[in-house]
Image (spheres, rainbow, N blue to C red):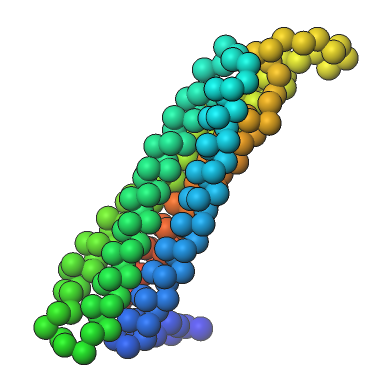
Length: 188
């Protein structure tokens, strides 16, 4: 316990390549799945807002805009995970002249990490804003009266926007953890 050595041993090159390929593949599919779910839910929310009655609630509209920005950023991140997979193939190649440099791998992982962290921030702000709007609607309703005011009714579409933003947080968080873990292994 008093030894200053790290308990984890650095990965060998073959272990790193196998880990890099596994994590990049897993990250790609998880983010693609969560992004698809968020996109579908967001489409339902946008179509429902356009076809249903229009209320004077700009808060949910702003949440939808932020969710779209988060979804676009997730699209970039999924593309970047595909680049991770290509880097993994290059690292697995038998010709050592096509190996990417450590600096190139580190730079690629950092771009992925930054894009995921920005995506987490945007999706977090969108989720907080959407939950605040839903909470404000809930608190504005008289608890004992069945009063109907259209702008204060909580619709299922409001929850769809929240669900899309929470899924985006998860997808971006998973991408950030993947990039951070791989970056940590590269720098050991």
